[in-house]
Length: 335
Image (cartoon, rainbow, N blue to C red; front, side, top):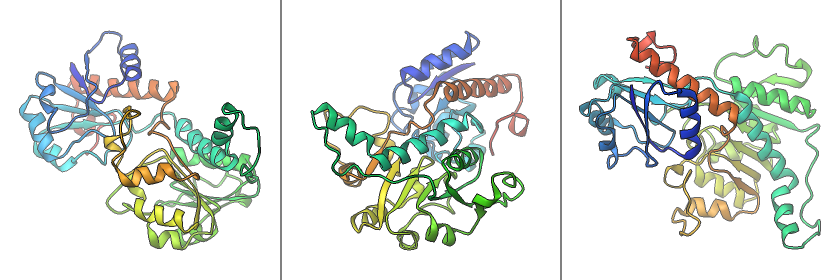
């Protein structure tokens, strides 16, 4: 099949070309899919998109009119895709439901440790010849209580890692995970409601998809219920956190540390180089300015293993579609 890749980067092209081995006809475009760029899909049977490509009803109608038949999301979440419009315009969609969960979980831990032990600040100081230890005091992870919101593949890996640190784990999930977690050090793990998690967790890490129901799950009311000085980590989707409420919580010192690999208005900036430009997003600029906030550019998935899984799964789904499978017949189809 002829496949147009949007929002492509050199590492995307390399990993997909390696996995493809000449089977499909791949074309890579660095621009995001939007109303303005959708014409690039003309002549392609399938498009491959990422988390910040724009897939609303109008774009999907244009894609259908251009002859596109399959949308392949090279990610797990599908919150940027209007599934109802897909059906209306006769478009099939596939995603990557599983890829290395270790990649995202380990990045969440990296954010925790960096914020706690101030290693990013120490690195910068040393390069300036400053070897002082002032304001670099952290805390032992051992003995702390970690609240894990979402006990899917990634959440479970994070739980295992934090148990290794000697933490107590509080888990909230919309699905009863008692059976799945029964062997996870029961004396150190409890399934709780959100209010209990908020009230007792020293660190809160988000590992749930973004839906209409949990949009701004972390809002002013939720933050008010949390422990003073709480650390909040988000490696899932930016829309789970109300940014204005987050900023207010940081300013009031209710929130002690924030680690974000995602941001609710990230689409304009993430994955691009703005080092010679002014950041005009006031909320993003404010977050960057806080000394106790660490932001990475949606890179939690960025390991060799995860990229390999994403490429192989995506191309398998496209091959299945090419072979005549549709809808629920596709291994990784979404509806």
